[in-house]
Length: 240
Image (tube, rainbow, N blue to C red; front, side, top):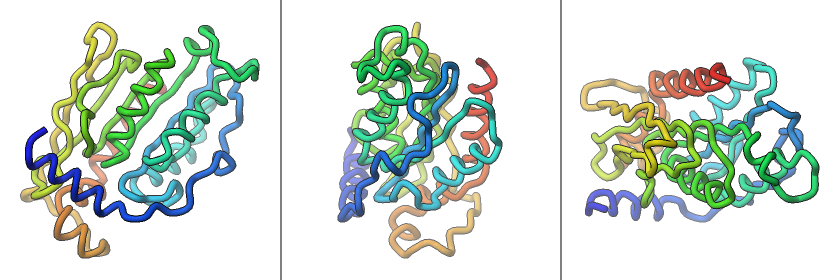
């Protein structure tokens, strides 16, 4: 990792501050277990955001819910709570409710995961946890992910996409992502967004974000970015 990326991670870690009250299983509305053929979509929040804060990750989840797509369930997760996301996945796809995902249940699991900033890094770390358990992921989408080792996508991911910027003074997204096993994972794209000239209104955000995370924050509020993410998810849903 370069000095600039290392500094950005350290800076973001300091900014995380004290975590709020932890997210609980009771916060999820997804039925457990899910009926056969249903899909679970998980969005990992960035920074120190709580699961229901109205970030771009949460707003996308709400838009997907409002579409009322049959058999699709959407939740948002705090990036520091991958353990509770793992519990949700295990319970959602454990259709015989015996507490263990058997091979048939793993193969039948239909999961899409996306995340922004530290949530983007959490997407890859979570995918690796599921890879160790033999649980597949249909699609992962990282949006300006910030973390260590979030460039290599594990082989349980069928398709992966990455959206990032390189204009930030301190925080820049991971690029490019690559498949550990290209025969099992298709990289749909590494899309770079340039904020040297593009104007995005961030007048409503705090001083820290404006000064130290200017490009990272502009990407967070760029509607074109989130339209692309939504389109990727909808395309994946329509492919099954």
